[in-house]
Image 1: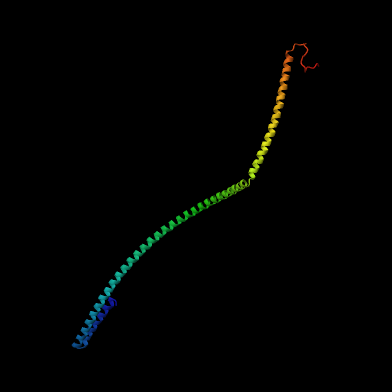
Image 2: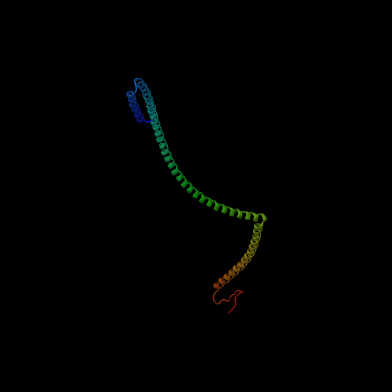
Length: 199
């Protein structure tokens, strides 16, 4: 019950008691008064209980308001932290994308280097196979023999050329000697050279 309703009831009871006293006898009025006093006492107790309940409700409201304020503050802090975490996540994602692009470029370079290395390994394997079956050695031996034959032929040609050169040098020396003699002979003297022919 509200305090206003309780006060109205008390006033109604008081007026009722007055009316009862007026119409009934003294004994009956005393009984009615005692009853009204009892109802008044009960009404006061109800008012006290209502005030206590009202105070408790006010305290509960204050506690609820404080809890709501705390919850709102905690929610605001959580939201701010979530925003900061989201911003950090976006930055981390951008860095991760950049790292992924760099890693892709590096992987392409490594793949290219691997392909080149594989090609070189294949070349070396082919060379090794040739060395094992001796084909290159055979080719080298044949080339050496051909070079030796060419060298021998060149040496023979050189010896022949040297011989021809020596003969030519000897002939030149003879001709120079003949020429010298011819210059030294007095004019009109018969030429004693066996190679001299009269024109």
